Each structure stands twice: as C-alpha cells, then as structure tokens.
Image (cartoon, rainbow, N blue to C red; front, top):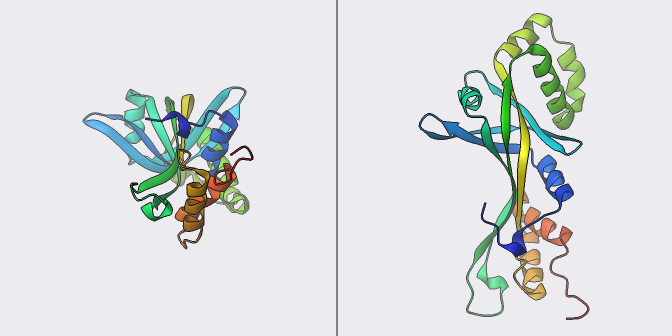
Length: 211
C-alpha cells in the first residue's frame, strides 16, 4: 500500500486495536483468472509475536479452494472515511481530498473443515460479536449443528506483514485540522463522524505550545 510518511502508523498496538475494532474485512487472494475477494467477518488474536486472523466462508464460495492452491493473501481492514471539503482551508488555492484509515495484513492462509476447528472459530466469532448467543448455539441439536458445519470451510491466516495508514490531514496546519474535525463531527453519518473522532484521538487539530 502506498503510504506517505506523515500518514504511516508504525505502532503495532494501534494497528492491532484497529483490526479488532473493524473486523468486517475484504479478503483477497489469487484465483485462476485473477484476484478474488470475499467480504467476511473475522476474529483477530495474537499469540506471542504471531498475529492470526480466523474466519469462515460458505463451502459454495470457491475462495477456500483458491486459498488452498495459493495461500498468500491480503486482508483489508477498513475504518471510517469521509470527503474533506476545500471549504475547510482558508487559502483559496487548495483542493478537496478524502480522509480514511485502513490496515493491510499480508499472510499465509490455511483452510480446514474439521468440525472441532470450525467450532473453535465459531466460538471466537460469537464471543466477539454476540456472546449471548453462545448458550443458544451450544444448545442446538447435533444434527442441525453438524449440517451447518458441513456448509462452511474455515480459514486461518498467519500474518507476515502489517501496513497501517491513517490519512487524517496530518499534512495540514492545526487550524485546518480543527476545521476538518468540526465539519466532519457535525455529520449524521457515523462513518464521517468517525473520522473526526479518530482525528481527535490522534491528537490532531491542537496547536502546539511552541507554535
């Protein structure tokens, strides 16, 4: 991913927190006739120095077969994004832009269909998204649950590289950043307002004492 230095985030903990906060991803890998992508929720965990991404796809989705043959893949975690109007800048000679945040996680995938492993992945996902459903899931009949498990294939991606880009007007003055935050913060669209929140969390829009 192209990342100018002022938009690059090198802190591992920040990247990991962003991945966990934005778990609906685009999984991309090679297929017979070019790239193949699947939109899918995932669970992210870290054991020692190894980050692992886990999820599942429908057995009818050929992506798992492509991952078997070409395990190298890219997982894109995308966060809030927003159009930034030129009206936020005092000088006339400016142009509008788009602010956003994203993490690209590269890795090697392994696919599996063993019921025990699938159950583990499903419990991870349930724990992340609706922990109250765990009791209902465990109470399903064996026949019903086994039928569901036969219809999915799990994947586990051992992450080898993470790139994090927060394009949040870091190249603008504190006054211009403050204008962007105020403008986006008034939006009813949560994705737009989310950019303002992320900018504030990154300490943007605040004039430094020495300036």
